[in-house]
Length: 391
Image (tube, rainbow, N blue to C red; front, side, top):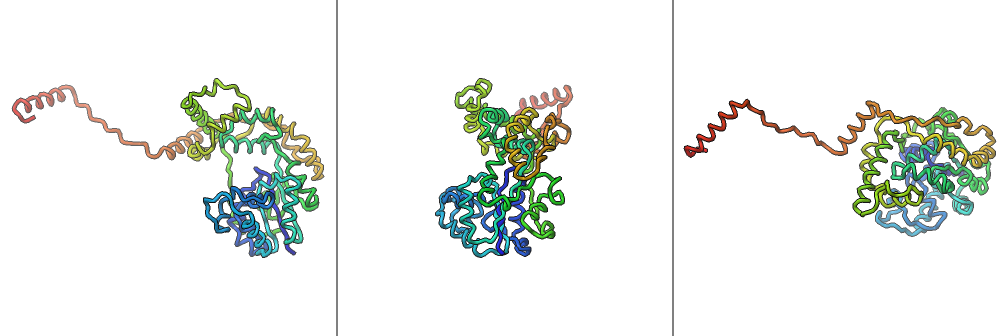
């Protein structure tokens, strides 16, 4: 019986690590009855072609598979869909796994398009989605955005002014309900991203159980963990560097400094777009992202607001999972710790800066200072040489 498992995310629940691990372990998985679709590591953009019939922006490993030029930006959708149909019609194992955290954003019509596209090839279709409590999810999501130039002030302003489109507000119902309506609740496996609830307390073991893999499969995986979190100290350094760069660029444009611009959401977003573009400071982020220090968390008042604004979604999720206590142990959140700037952190900062700047240490060339009488004697000697034509 041919089975399809569609892993749809959500973000900040280990999706990238799952995809990287299964991508690296593809051949070993086939021997255990699992075919991780060989059309790239993350299938989000691939499935976007299915739901939008557009291949614009498709890139990465899939360009090698399709045999197209990497520089192209708009491929023929039928080229992509034809290759996908061929892979689905002739899987290398009974269970095919497709994974893309972007899939959790699909609406009902898009879910129907996915169903209609894959249904001819499979007897069973299962949806796997991980959910994470709002407080730790929001802190992790905020960290990711702050590394890319968004400020905490911008994220908090968006939370109050436009919560439906705020990057640090989780969306459980909007991301999952359409799948339940299209595929049926019995075919949607909602799992909690919490080690206390995972099989053997391990994400890979839990995901293998979710897709119906044998208990031996986690042991054959080449595990790859991605998106390591940055410490609070690293984030403060990254944000401070963005501030320095922004002020320098503002001055070059003759624009007012940050301190003179009202901190409205519109102004913060404009500054992010114009002065804090992620690529402009990538080397600095790379240099300091791994320094050790205090675990990052959003301030408690922000987490209180996120919890309150998420309550309707949480209650919906508790209803569909039949778990009235879901996420109860996540609230109230603890106060965010202050940065420690301990010895380890400072050593890591110094090491990161040294690696970023290169070898700046040079031996200082100093002349030894002779005693006064000796210096006077040398001057007299040079004067005498010049007098007799030897100087």
